[in-house]
Length: 208
Image (tube, rainbow, N blue to C red; front, side, top):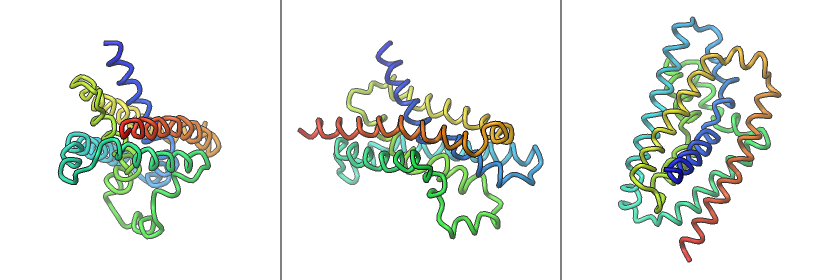
């Protein structure tokens, strides 16, 4: 039971760090500035639902993707660890939130009604990094069925926390400010960097 809890805690910290809802607060506050309370809630619910479904789909189908493309889990861990380290590095340098969207995507955002789906749901909350993290944990060789179930519980908890953080984003943004959000993102980046290196090391050990 203790081992299961430690695995759950590790997955939760990794998923929360990569999703980093604090990094989405400035974006959400800006994009929903003229929304009514109900519109904001509806948009947020849609984004959380989409992000959760995306992570669930890749979490459940991850091993089948490996089978279809004949991908070694340890190799994926190394590649995933490198990707996550790049994300963590950008977070620590205050670049991650801005680099998630291309200029063309930014230009289209104002014209879209589905802000909750794109870009808030995907890729801001459920981006490549979050998808990679979930797949790595689900396909962990030592993971039991209980461990795998706990990963999806961790995803749900992270998304619930994200919902409330973003719902009260105006308050958080007011008190934390831009600097506060950047500090939190850098701390998340540092945690993620350590975990990404651990993924790489585990992958290398698995190959040899």
